[in-house]
Image (tube, rainbow, N blue to C red; front, side, top):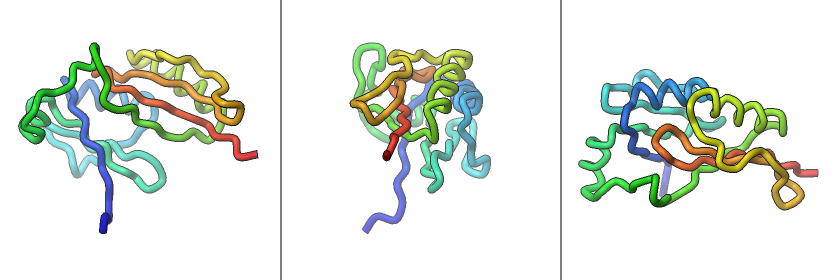
Length: 132
């Protein structure tokens, strides 16, 4: 059935978004990059998160782009290797111009995480899951 998954996100400025995500520790596949898009690689399986300029994205979806100041369609979650990594990421997000809307804290007694918005208002959640 499905061989691969990737996520497409609209951004106002591809270069600024790439700089933001690079500052907080993500890498990019330069071979998949144009002025209209950048391919951010996430996790050990390197799942691509394609950052498309809003105009290009709008053409793909043939629909309006969500106004992230008024609503959210999704939250993208990823894991951290430690509580310290969650704390460090929160600081990097702030320094890079993002907004940590949920500061690092215990979640349900077995997770530790925080949540933030990127430069375009997309919501992200990072969790360290203690399996002990």
